[in-house]
Image (cartoon, helix red, strand yellow):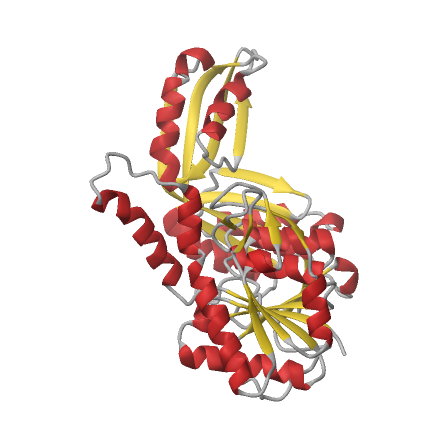
Amino acid sequence: MARIVMKFGGTSVADIARIHNVARHVKREVDAGHEVAVVVSAMAGKTNELVGWAREMPKACGANSPFFDAREYDAIVASGEQVTSGLLAIALQSIGVDARSWQGWQIPIRTDGAHGAARILEIDGGEIVRRMGTGQVAVVTGFQGLAPDNRLATLGRGGSDTSAVAVAAALKADRCDIYTDVDGVYTTDPRIEPKARRLSRISFEEMLELASQGAKVLQVRSVELAMVHGVRTFVRSSFEDPDAPGMGDFDNPPGTLICDEDEIVEQQVVTGIAYAKDEAQISLRRLADRPGVSAGIFGPLAEANINVDMIVQNVSEDGSKTDMTFTVPTGDLEKAVSVLEKAKDSVGFDAIQSEAGLVKVSVIGIGMRSHAGVAATAFKALAEKGINIRAITTSEIKISILIDGPYAELAVRTLHSVYGLDKQ
């Protein structure tokens, strides 16, 4: 017997029929003798609808400001998960499984006070563990917890994944199964490269890089949390038949296991290719090369909540001037340029150049630590396809390359092939 946390995303619980299907997945694990807790998202599209209502209300009342109390925003958007948890509890009861729904504040899942983007601080899972020991399934609302002001606080987009991993850590679960609309983690996006392969295992570090570089399978914070607490996590499909052969195999269920790299016997040099569209590049020309310049640039951008990614600096021959190039999300480009124009006098640069519509392609693999020539292989392959590289950043297990948007799919397919990822 094992203790399992099962998480189901919005597409998995999109309607009554799909919630019934989820209940069958849960029943399979209960019938196998496992202790089970379930974490659910809101039904697909419901959170967006609730957010829209919250944003529309000030306008409908003729308010001069579009802003509203973040605590009330949380009270509204958290209701989507509450509906799902209640419906799933009813579905489980209807097929003979003892179940009870739990809202975040009832456990409680304690968070900080950053309403709308709260972080989990502590989970007291004692009562849930006691009830699981009697065979009862706990159906927990994802995405939410209890803030220090004793009000509901939501965790931000993708927060249900984070909730599931946090609950798994608190309950000391043997595994956290993330059920979604894909059947695992692939070497790249199958929509771009049909030869992409599903990975049976991937390390926490590699998954963290894939998630942060554009892969949409898991939310970055959930992977960070799983890595810190050592929560073995399976990515699985909720759309497969719950009773199909192998679905109940505890040691090797269909899907991708995210685990410590020590559990991966054969490590490939490159594990996957990720990409992120809608990147924009900003270049500041002829900056004074003196202490404090970087702080003068990136400090105001951080205060404006603009995320800066790739950074490249070139110093002139005499060392007096430098050019600084970096990337931001395309949606933040206009705001970033405005912030920098205001800081021009204090920072001291001659000109700003900017361009949108770029793409960042990343090569990821823990095998890079012990193999030379990985970067050179990528650069040569792209050059042979006539793809110009605008910027490069690297880490111990990642190479990120900035290119023009129209070449995104060609670059992904080229790199996927050159590293042998399309071979069985």
